[in-house]
Length: 585
Image (cartoon, rainbow, N blue to C red; front, side):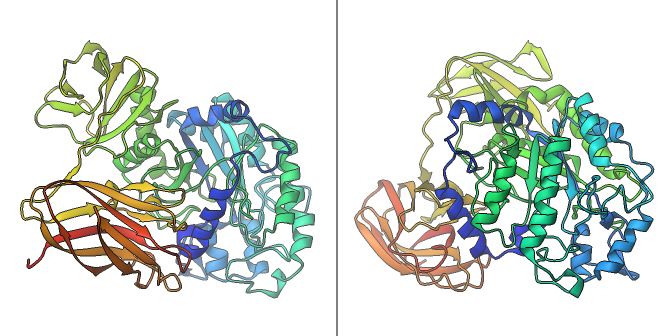
């Protein structure tokens, strides 16, 4: 596993995103287009599940982040690459790998008690070591270690006993052990040199075939598609045809969209409307075990991440990194079980839900929904005792999910419903209020932005309407309009002007080298300003740039738009905000 945002350039990511956006929704390997009904049936369990356990476990658990007495920076499972450990030296860790405390039923029980509905484990990571009994070669946990067992197979049997779907991760292209395998940054040991095509034909593809035949996983999670051409991905797709019910992700390579988007270590601001997606994330700062990484996220963070992701239509694949003994660290288990306790009470607001109906997440929390029900996940309990929801539906019943038999009072006014809440929150992290409503949820029109008392007009990316196919809101608050790869896309805001006049216009944006130079037009009514995007350093290096002065003639509702005239690089810009300041201030 690697953090693609850190390992790959933003330009590559944008190009991949553009290719995925142009790809058909149907499974790329199907000779006939998969119908919506067929896809819905195949993806049904996954969409219901919402919460899964990712497990990064392999030889890297033996050094546990330390090589030759030195702590190696970066994530634990990348120690062979980051420490530039020779192939022969790294392979010796297998002689010490004897995880006698591994218990497949115990791991499945932890996942179940944490409220997880599926599991994905590293059958082979980039170090090339297999955690299953492959017949391809002896570099696997059964043949090369004192353990002489197959944990992947054991977990595939244990998980169904806990009603958990089982899946595997497989690094199809990057392999630092087998000659010819890909390596990010290039090989550092002559033993790694060889024929990439031979590696695919004699190691990678046969092992994927083994996994599908012997384990029959519900999910196959590919990663880091180094060197995967159209022809090479086609050979993998032929193998995947043998398991029509299989769900696989978007990391096989060559723009193959797969079934799921896979944002890593981040929660997309608006999810992926129209696409199935899951955020994969670590509990601490590493995927594979590092003995000295105890920077665990709090239960509050983990639980609110889950709610946030589900409220945007996604799944949460949360990682654990077991030790060389086969133990999931207690600090991770404690937090998972705490999330599970919350789900025992409030699971109906997570499992089988869809994204909330509101474009922008409310300040007090998040919203999920099912037909006839809205689930209000309240993070910040209102001091006033009332919570106002902008919907036009009739509410037939309101109650706390933790106390369903005790009705809450509601009042309706001006296309909104106010729920009267108890004085204190029943749960300090997230309390769930249920609104049972008649018909499909009808949201009230969002109020336009207002001019500040000092005359300033602030237009944040999170408040923009994005028109087009590629540009979208990304990142956590304050967020930005990014992935702007189509110059036909544009953004607009509606603002109520109370103090017209002349305004100085400033844009806050970022642009990496090589993508600067795009021209754009900023318009307010029939008044326009022309601007050109400068390079700022990178896609995360924001800079405030004065565009010019523009006049707003009269008070009332105004529409502000930013439309590119062309695109000179990978993307137009990452636009975070526009500020209009009264001239002279």
